[in-house]
Amino acid sequence: MMKHNRPPRGLFITLEGGEGCGKSTQARLLGEYLRSQGHVTVETREPGGTPLAEKVRSVLLDRADEPVAPETEAFLVLAARRQHVTQVIEPALARGAIVLCDRFSDSTLAYQGYARGLNVPLLERLNRLATHAVTPHLTLLFDLPVATGLARRRSASETNRLDRESLRFHQKVRAGFLDLAKRHPARIKVIPSRASKETVARTVARIVAPILTRLHPADHQTATPRMTSRARQVRHALR
Image (cartoon, rainbow, N blue to C red; front, side, top):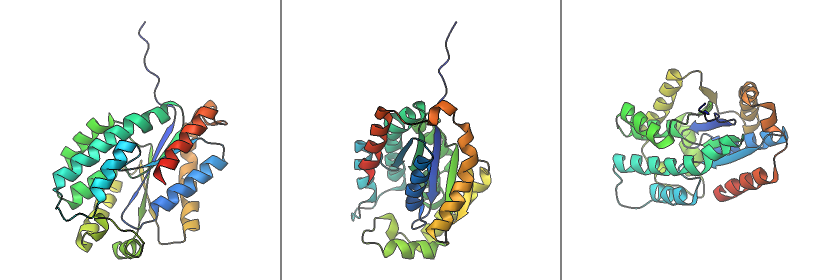
């Protein structure tokens, strides 16, 4: 009798939103909360998450003078994603970890699709190739007025190429994210993020709590030394 591969045991949670929405802070706080509850987490980001994908990230976000074609941007993002899924996300899910990813496929659709004008259904097909159909169990979309988010980002010590895009571009990004949330209401949960980070974190915890029941009881007990080492490795590479 042919044996079927066991489906991934872990949970895949992505955090999305426009520039300055606070998702990176919330990813850190959510990771701390989950570990305090005894869960094993792997915290990562896109573009990036592996040494090769981080190099692609640097190319994508560099404030160089050379214009970047929308198609080039999309291909680079998707190439980095394939490496990330293969090297980090799929192995972590197979081990039963909770993967927290700061940006994933919805960002590609919002930025390169809705804002850059590339064909969204085509991007969705290319993304399935890049991810081998790995899809988040839950996506937290942090929503903030564009002007507020850009003011936060542009006051930071470091800004990147996307931070310098026009207000209209970022408005299209926000509209794209909200349209995706309407299309996928079971997966994408919109979280207003103008409140304090503590208030937003409490909202996140309320949303995440029910999905934790997906984990098999044996999968979120105390981590093995190997798992703990791997989780620390991934976090260290991204900070």
